[in-house]
Length: 78
Image (cartoon, rainbow, N blue to C red):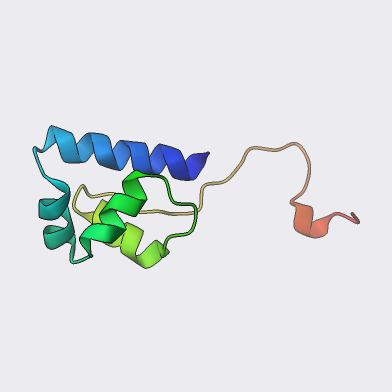
């Protein structure tokens, strides 16, 4: 899933920068439990807190368009 890709990338970056989970939690202003849950791929996390962590690496969650031939589902009659 896209979420697990984000969490895997965050963990990879944390290790590249030689940060412990504790260091990352402190620098991002979130709790250690949050960092652990993020790295374990918890499906429901607060987006604002995920962005606090990602901001350490100049990243953020954002909508990404999905290329499609059809109009958005919003306009379908399904």
